[in-house]
Image (cartoon, rainbow, N blue to C red; front, side, top):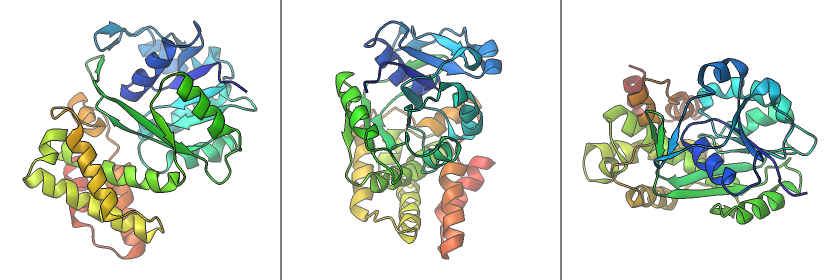
Length: 298
């Protein structure tokens, strides 16, 4: 079955990036942003810019939405429960849910509500999107990596692969998506928290100095937690993620640093909070993440 209709949950950096890209390539009305009714009343008419151009994909309230072929979940994990409620009217018998949320828990929480059949595992990486003051700017679109979870229906990943190819969305189907998911989480533990704590950028965490030491130290602690959980994340993966950061626009900032500047609640619980919980479970010392969590929450 082809993917002909898409609902995007989340009108921030990644939601706008992917939603507007798909909206420009699919039939009119085939892509919609969907908000819960209260948020739609407050922000549904907000005019947003994407690289200087007015965002054109329509926004509809959840009460007027209908089942779609694909739900693209692009929200902060702090708002996941509300997003799941918003998705209720979008789910049909063959609806796929593609989550590009940070962390390693969003797919599991989606599957707890709707089942694993339409839920693959995925990460979005390599984009330098910055969303500030109602405007999204980016130079690098990055890519999506995806693969099946144990309970994902066999048709889900091939259909997504074909759809993303047709839409010219950079992506790859991973043989071991679980490894990719935990590797990206390790990166976010380092770069998101360090940039939020120091007011840093991709360039400042990549350059020699205190921010780089904290960035790498936080990732090494996350790596130890991932391995204790049975995921084969390695020092080579850490090096690859550090090199990826060094390749991005130096003055770009990740989502948690943007949240700090915008006065929004951060995803520190998804990153450092998860490290602390796993470290306690496995008897690991994680002083860098403990310091980052304390500093960011303060």
